[in-house]
Length: 75
Image (cartoon, rainbow, N blue to C red; front, side):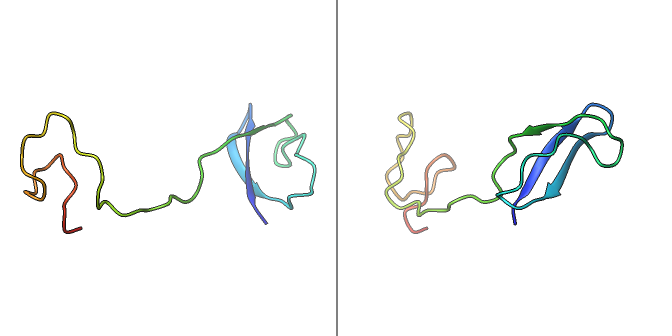
Protein backbone atom coordinates (compact mmCIF):
# COMPACT_ATOMS: atom_id res chain seq x y z
CA UNK A 1 0.00 0.00 0.00
CA UNK A 2 1.39 3.44 -0.89
CA UNK A 3 1.87 6.34 1.50
CA UNK A 4 0.01 9.55 0.60
CA UNK A 5 0.80 13.03 1.90
CA UNK A 6 -1.85 15.55 2.95
CA UNK A 7 -1.79 19.19 4.08
CA UNK A 8 -3.84 20.21 7.13
CA UNK A 9 -4.29 23.95 7.87
CA UNK A 10 -4.08 23.33 11.65
CA UNK A 11 -1.52 20.51 11.96
CA UNK A 12 0.61 20.92 8.85
CA UNK A 13 1.66 18.08 6.55
CA UNK A 14 1.11 14.46 7.47
CA UNK A 15 1.23 11.17 5.66
CA UNK A 16 -1.04 8.16 5.75
CA UNK A 17 -1.00 4.61 4.42
CA UNK A 18 -3.93 4.02 2.03
CA UNK A 19 -4.99 1.56 -0.63
CA UNK A 20 -4.65 2.86 -4.19
CA UNK A 21 -8.38 2.31 -4.70
CA UNK A 22 -9.35 4.26 -1.55
CA UNK A 23 -10.81 7.75 -2.05
CA UNK A 24 -8.64 10.67 -0.86
CA UNK A 25 -9.15 11.86 2.72
CA UNK A 26 -11.47 14.83 3.16
CA UNK A 27 -10.71 15.61 6.82
CA UNK A 28 -7.86 15.02 9.24
CA UNK A 29 -8.79 12.31 11.74
CA UNK A 30 -6.74 13.99 14.49
CA UNK A 31 -8.36 17.46 14.40
CA UNK A 32 -11.30 17.27 11.96
CA UNK A 33 -10.00 20.02 9.64
CA UNK A 34 -10.46 19.67 5.87
CA UNK A 35 -7.29 18.46 4.13
CA UNK A 36 -5.77 18.62 0.65
CA UNK A 37 -3.77 15.82 -0.94
CA UNK A 38 -0.32 17.04 -2.01
CA UNK A 39 2.28 15.74 -4.43
CA UNK A 40 5.44 14.65 -2.68
CA UNK A 41 8.89 13.74 -3.94
CA UNK A 42 9.57 10.24 -5.16
CA UNK A 43 11.21 7.86 -2.75
CA UNK A 44 13.75 6.37 -5.14
CA UNK A 45 16.19 7.45 -7.79
CA UNK A 46 17.62 5.55 -10.72
CA UNK A 47 21.39 5.26 -10.76
CA UNK A 48 23.33 4.86 -13.95
CA UNK A 49 26.88 4.53 -15.12
CA UNK A 50 29.06 7.61 -15.50
CA UNK A 51 31.06 6.08 -18.37
CA UNK A 52 30.70 8.24 -21.44
CA UNK A 53 29.00 11.00 -19.44
CA UNK A 54 29.23 14.51 -20.86
CA UNK A 55 32.04 16.74 -19.63
CA UNK A 56 31.66 20.48 -19.05
CA UNK A 57 32.49 22.51 -22.17
CA UNK A 58 35.05 24.54 -20.17
CA UNK A 59 37.12 21.42 -19.26
CA UNK A 60 40.49 21.29 -21.02
CA UNK A 61 41.92 18.31 -19.10
CA UNK A 62 42.46 15.07 -21.03
CA UNK A 63 39.70 12.50 -20.61
CA UNK A 64 40.35 10.31 -17.57
CA UNK A 65 42.62 12.87 -15.88
CA UNK A 66 40.33 12.93 -12.85
CA UNK A 67 39.57 16.63 -12.60
CA UNK A 68 36.88 17.55 -10.05
CA UNK A 69 34.26 18.67 -12.59
CA UNK A 70 34.47 15.62 -14.89
CA UNK A 71 33.22 12.08 -14.47
CA UNK A 72 35.98 9.56 -13.87
CA UNK A 73 36.86 7.31 -16.81
CA UNK A 74 37.43 4.31 -14.54
CA UNK A 75 34.20 4.67 -12.50
